[in-house]
Image (cartoon, rainbow, N blue to C red):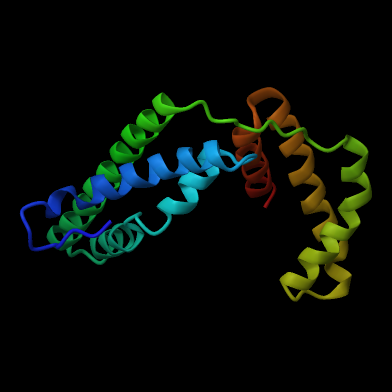
Length: 173
């Protein structure tokens, strides 16, 4: 979405971009199946999020430049709010126009976790360039993550299940 930042419509740029991303995400999931509208919308939103503004704002506040940091932080929150509101409205409009086919995914059987755990630990070992004698620690970490992800998904759904696994790994240190 092109809006000149010097025009009188400049404050609407983030809102319009979010609405466009939401509308296109849901519309693409209607036209191209099987696609999840949430995944398509999130993929198109990555460029619109004000991550740099928020990060610099927090860094400035930490560095005791409170006024500049607060200004950047509030600007980032306002841009984020405009984008989110645009996405909500764009998705609602697209959902009203059509009925998207949201695919349902089934999780893999429990025994596949047991079979794949050693390989996942080996992959993590290679990615983090760790020594071979650290493999049991990686196997334990992957096992904890997988177990808590399964339990969290069973009780709270897939989105929260991943958060439960991350929390369990963070607590186990």
